[in-house]
Image (tube, rainbow, N blue to C red; front, side):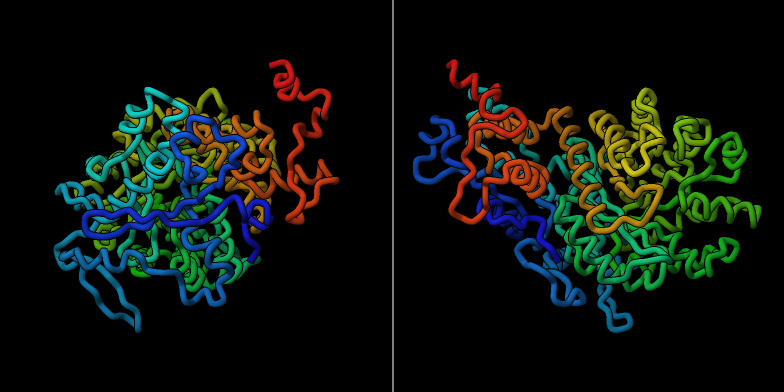
Length: 567
């Protein structure tokens, strides 16, 4: 597998590390990337405060052990189980052996969800971890914050550092979720919701046409190395169970699924053959494997189907279409709706969060914000209230294809109906004619809805609507959505996001090219483009990039260079 960072220039600038933070009962190792800033651009006041060593800049990291482990020789082994010791504190958890596998589940009559503990005021190791992780770019970059904000820095640091107590309160209220199945001990916990960094999800998975276990595991690893906060396995072809097992055992981020896909596979591709019993068994099987969140399209009801007939594109959600076809064939209500309480019992037994699916999301801008879409959202709200009685963690999925002038209505209605629970949106795509560039079209909508409060953005790749993405498509999709998420965080007022941009500006003013590449969301691509435009520069360890202009302006027309001359 290729490394996300290949260049020797960048490898000397960017290092993967874990910051050791002592918690209440455990030492937590928080993943970060450290950037070694060139001494030439460091302001004098920082040099005065840190005379012994050159200060480094710390960045939130999603890659787990990858980039320090190199290529996995055997993906069946998996990565370290960092949460295994944490589980021993939970009296409500029992361990059973099933088919030579160790499975954790709640004892009879007990619940083991993060929300269950939060409601009791119990701060779990996962809550602690999330608090320290969300704050890492503040606590480790204090010297840079003090330089930028001067006398306001103390107040900014105090407000920006998140406490485990605050995380616990937000989880109890349903405004933050921590997807963390007790059967996914390899997970490095992360939070989704109000007051946290905007997260992104990457979809992977095989189809009946192509891809296999090794390719999907590599796509997952590639996605987290590029910056994905969660990954959904949407496999619809053969070996679904084996692919999912390999992905979970090697994933440091939460893994989500849409269980109805595997159910349809077991039903030989015929929705009419699906039963509640089959669906229930698949839920339990996936929960026992360690899936952290399920997308369940329980908000799509039989009475909504006539509303779809008014649409231009109809139902474009795969899960929604399967459920709709089942209801038509059986002339019955959606079985995931009628069995919702039983579903919640399963979720609370393993601490699987639920993403209530948007089976009626609009598939073209003509259908945006229509009666069908909002009718389903109202049912989502009802389902969330019912899930709360079982202490299940909930987020809500949203559209879809929405023109820019209608995007903000979506999040305002969602906040109102769903008590500010985390909103998880696909895009939205803002125009239907960007085939091959839908990652850009959707990122425009994602930035707008993210800045208004959406908690997690589901990426779109250049292959959206036309094909199964490969590894490079995954990279393109993740980086595009990292831009949207970062821009959203600046708009939300997160100091850590703003600080990184200020350091980039400083690097540009000082013509510190290596710092510019290292601070970029895609360092390798920015360096590659620079090298292509400056063929005289060779990366051989001897030559250093030290020119004070770029090839866009050249040496005579560079505004920054001219400004320095005139100082």
